Length: 134
Image: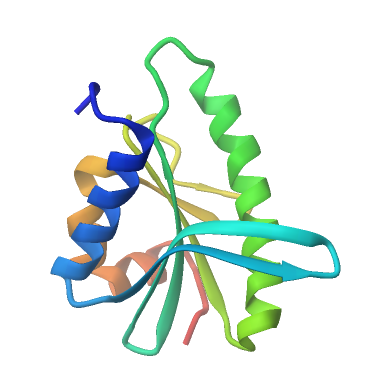
């Protein structure tokens, strides 16, 4: 998996969502008073909306600190998007490499190898993380 491009990684994340019967929109661009923003995949099922950001970091990067920065940025994007769609949006980052960081600033971080299990047991994980998205 290390040899795939970030675009291919985003497509794999979208395919896993679709294989779990999520309705998906790919590379969703929106504009608001703060400007333009993009979410890799917006997925909907069970009345829940997931905004998924796929991160394909290299092994040599300072991934943990980069992941924290990206989680904060993704939370902001999701908050803005939530106002546009007038619905709660659950921020999720899918990371190619497991950095053992699973939530940061309200953003759920899922290692790619665990993504399918996360989707199959979504309500359980949301409850475990203390997310009130009902």
